[in-house]
Length: 258
Image 1 (tube, rainbow, N blue to C red):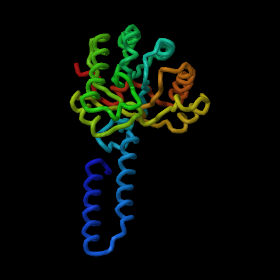
Image 2: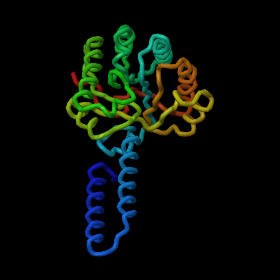
Image 3: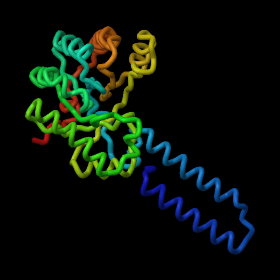
């Protein structure tokens, strides 16, 4: 399997071979450029493809074979949308996982407490969700994650163990931060693209065409359109024999570590 360690080893070996050949023969410099481009391409692929497990293992689905799926939400809580999502989930007696941004928690602790009281999972999605998060130092990453962890614990009394990288981007620095805090990295296998696609019908069609057993489905609880979208998705999934379960039940991995 392609991963960071193997890619580095292959690249170093390739450069050594080219250097040896260059010493004995006339090797064109473009071969060195091609090797570098291939290496950079592998790093880009690994960084932006969360299911590649390029830098570290990320749980993106269940392989149990059961016709079960889990629903997850990113970027909340927000007072305009998250309570509506909670009402809909309560109506259908479903449990979801909310990957919360720490800076949104302080003014919405009551929403977090409601999530917890109604049996939903509350998980870490960094404090700022900054565009430059992946360029932070390891120390700053740990501080961000710990700050959100503390906010969740202050509101619920629970220490979250699940973490989802912003934008699904990974790198070696994040690997060290995740290891330091002993988090379980969680990705997704079915992305709704509800923050990219504006047409609800197109989003729903995308979900229907791709839904399969074991999926971790990604929505965002920050845009009101997610509520009718979620309602139709739940109806479609249940009508087609999918059981919607809590993320920890789907994975068989504890969501809290204390």
